Amino acid sequence: MRAGGGRPKAVTDTDARRFSPACERNRGPILAALKPRLREARRVLEIASGTGQHAAAFAPELPHLSWQPSDLRASHISIEAWRKSVKATNLLPVIELDLLQPQHRLNLEPVDAIFAANLLHISPPEACPALAEIAAEKLTPGGNLIVYGPFRYPGQTLTPSNQQFVNWLKAQHPRFDIRDKAELDQLMAAEGLTAVDDLTMPANNRLLIWQKPQTAEADIATLAVS
Ligand SMILES: C[S@@+](CC[C@H](N)C(=O)[O-])C[C@H]1O[C@@H](n2cnc3c(N)ncnc32)[C@H](O)[C@@H]1O
Image (cartoon, rainbow, N blue to C red; front, side, top):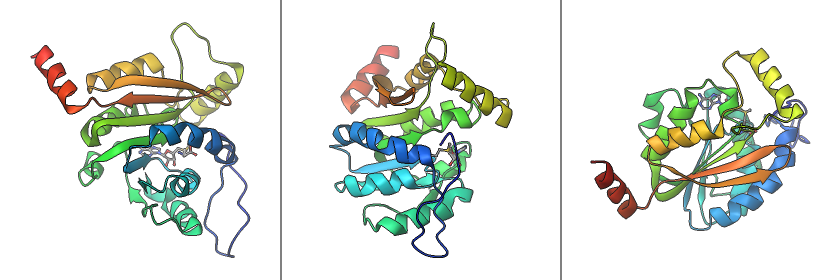
């Protein structure tokens, strides 16, 4: 959601759906990458659902699983409006989840995958370890944390468009920034999550995937460090 603005063609006069042109552009490539990776998943938690467009686009295409959108309260009206517009029974009502509020995690059910798009650069750095903690706590063994957005890589300068984006982010808040993939790998590893995929996506974005080990692997890892 790098640029806001615009609205979908309204279905009612009181249509509360917010519209992100970036979501319209990236939902196809993201869905194509998610489909094979969510074949075995039954429950997905989306963090930072934003307008609700991704949830509304993905849930009907993944009817074998339930899709749980979440975000800060301010986004709920739009997410619910998108949910009602698609009438997919596997798209659950939005729940409140602020990554930085530990009490919001208490009632979260275990899930087989967590998806978060365009979140980590537009929240303070503490959101990164918080996301790792939630994934470690709530993913079922073998479950995937799937994160979409732009990232930094050691030894590589940002593309001009991503550098421009950083300038814009920092004007919004000095602690917003495109996050470093290697630093994220370390945070995830500290929570027992392994980097398993890093896919090139359109417009200089990536789809990063970390996996929680299967139980036996987790037991071996715990034994190895004890
Ligand atoms: C740029 S939008 C991305 C929305 C959507 N995922 C997308 O790709 O279009 C960033 C979203 O992150 C959410 N957000 C910001 N800080 C958050 C936090 N601490 N916990 C959960 N969500 C947060 C915002 O409410 C907003 O919906």
